[in-house]
Image (cartoon, rainbow, N blue to C red):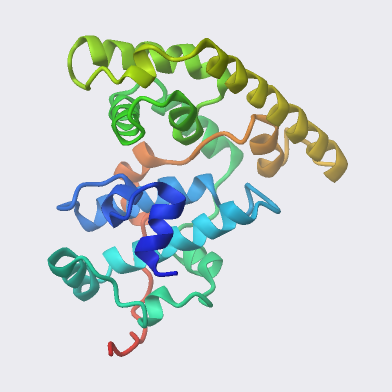
Length: 252
């Protein structure tokens, strides 16, 4: 399966830009930030044993590899195709090693600090509106994708989106304005089950939630996309390092 097909299957869009949540004319820095934000959500360290998360992580790496390469990005922009034979999208590439070269290891305190800055910020508002449009008001998918959101955040997220609808910043999708009560209840049950499973896994692994980043992520219902998007804007040199120049595969 090609990269564009994988994107459609895993992220409900074949647009590489939409996958990373950036505009077509986004700068290199904006593309890196988009990649960083989304890859944090599905990083193997944060979803141990989750094969779909691992696959998403690999696909995000490929998307970034294409958009961060001037020549490949130009071809994609002009023709809408990806060179599947390029080394940069090699399925056997070590995407974890690639990610580590780009971004240093983060700490629990880093994540907590980011969350405080992100929640109720203009950046969160723009991200939520983007997700609302992408998923046409489907709260199941919005809450699954929203950054720094747990089930307890749903009333706050819904209020933010409701204000956006009333202000006509986004259309009034029926899936949002007339959501089925049963669907809301199912979402609540799912969140409770995930919380219980995460706590059981934490205990089985003998992890201390105070000392382990993995345990914290598990205990908090697989918190979405914890990262430094706001901090990266100020610490670009540190958190958005470009990989050292390497040999590119010959295009055929």
